[in-house]
Image (tube, rainbow, N blue to C red; front, side, top):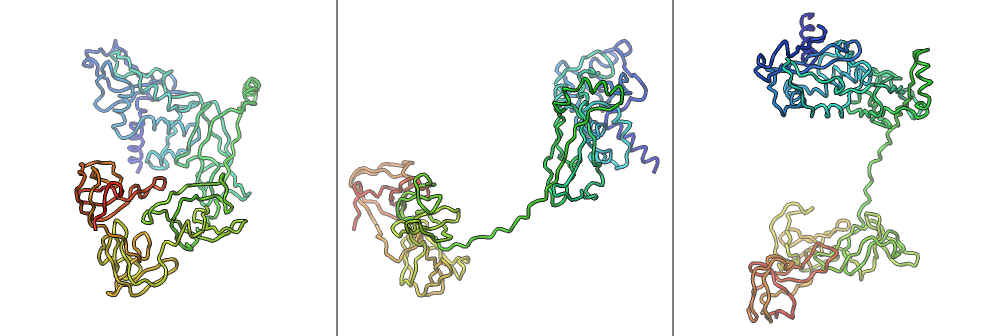
Length: 488
């Protein structure tokens, strides 16, 4: 077991890039190893000075197989080669910085690095004493070009290292907003209060919940900590520095992390649909039951019934003047006058229904309408034997036991006028689409055209007027009687 632990520690040292630290300054000058000895520009890795007790002691980081430098090589290229070994250097340096500044505990750092929780990292983290890692400075360093001096390692200038003095100290206190005791279990790996350090302006976001633990049923008031010195404290900085020499105390900024109990989410109670209606005229939806021009929400144009807007009505109401209103599912209001809106489903017994939808409709085996039997094209008629009503829905049963919808946008008890052929009164165009926007060819005056059905332009667009079109072989033509004549 002791031998295994030794292997882990040595392996971690290699991974963290902290080899060559214990032997003092290991710089190798150009006079000792020449460019010729290194095959011109080949280096073994990069190096840098530590901090605290290791300041002035060069720390070497070897790269597997070394690296061939060119005039375009940057430290970022060397760091990328290091990352090929399995870990990004910036994350490793940042981890050690968090441990040094008590933002993470050693156990948390070990979990993050994926090593045994009792691994001793102190021999590594103490090399950044008094410093906090800066991702911004790391990115600046990554674009720097190392100087090719003929040494074994490319040395990172000390002033370029991605660290800033950690001069701001925060004391984090964790408490519950409702006054209850902080759960001991949630803070088994945490200190309360917890003193941490960082550089001025540093913002730490606690993605891993290593600093701000999660408490079931509660939410913390923040997920980040900013290292900002109190302005009052800054104005007294000279006095604080004098006190430090006398008492050894430093200015500590208090920060409170407050946990608030999560609200109990009530299950949504769905208001049942009273009925569905469709629009028959131009009208508006309104914010309140007493219609005001200033409270209009949306304007709906009159459309063919097939494409008329449909609304879920959840309640009936009256204005202060006694005008009938429908309250819609979204809380808005529309008029309930039959001239403007009507029930979406046919009511009462019917003897025959005709399919009016351009897309046709289906017959079903039973109720609800799920098991399709066959499709009915526009213009098809069926004989009805019985109406079935369930809530606001109506279905009709046919003689063969199948069922069809009672939706007015799909079927009608009134026989539609079926047009079989039209004759052009003037030159017209054949279009690929019902909106007559993609022209195919011209049809000369006096030509007879067979009609397969009918449809309407801009059907699903509530803000555009719809016009009738005839579906013919290859596309659509106008239904304007000034341009075509219906043949009997």
